[in-house]
Image 1: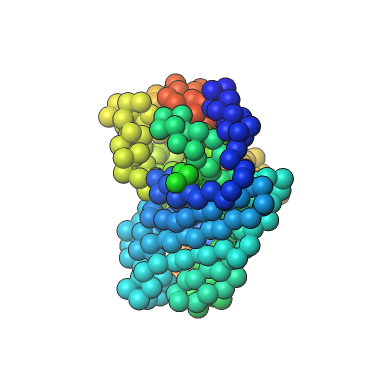
Image 2 (image 1 turned 45 degrees about the vertical axis):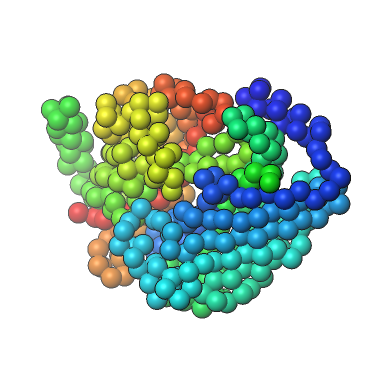
Length: 187
Length: 189
């Protein structure tokens, strides 16, 4: 851990603060997951396995942008039958709407770290505002490939009915909690 | 192992039989998924899930007692990244060829009112048994709206240090501390 912390500290000490930097999401370490309440009995979870996107960050000017595309067909719950149902018309309707998209409009910062990203989320062809809260943002040098990398945990809540996904509400809750682990390499 | 388990089952069934109000429940594998969270390089929280979990639960809500037995198939580990899953199944992590199951068995249940609130027990991972305390949130029982069967469900959390079980690979780059989040539903027999 000390080596990693030292690497992260070194990266923090010599940040290229002068200009906006662009990053590409690391699809192997970026997974949006969601939680819904099931019949009042338990919190059921799912995850999307294919996510791509771009982030720009100017930590001095405290500005940035985020664009994310999620492959709706990559939904994964650990249960084949449920996944078949989720990709169908009742839920993500993947044949018609193959991607979910998020595009930022603004970012807030806490010091030089992003604290939230507000933007537009598009699901089932419906675009609604969504704010992602950023937890534990950190950048550093990857210990193996030596590339500059940033990572964070993001979360948000939405009501799926606002996007027209109303099947089984309220048996399966309208409110959806998103938890998104993100890592991105500097281009 | 089968004899040991039969022996344990006999004891547990004996315990259950002794309390008139105890009901047994079969864990519903379609709505029971243990998932875990670990820190990755201090950059993000990476998650994984086990897809195959079985178990049995006995509850006597009036007498506030019961027991829990869970078995998780580590081969069913699922992170969304096939390469990572292969590494996790290998001997550097879950060593699934040698250790076919992860086991949990309770040693004591705690209730708040008539709601289950904590399960103390023993987790066996990589053949190493260690005590673990499961926090039970939003415990709820009621009839399933479709099957009409009595169902109990809960959200369970716990933390452990994987090094306590001998799983030390990539510590601390991949966190030693593991957070467990387990959605559980069980159907009354």
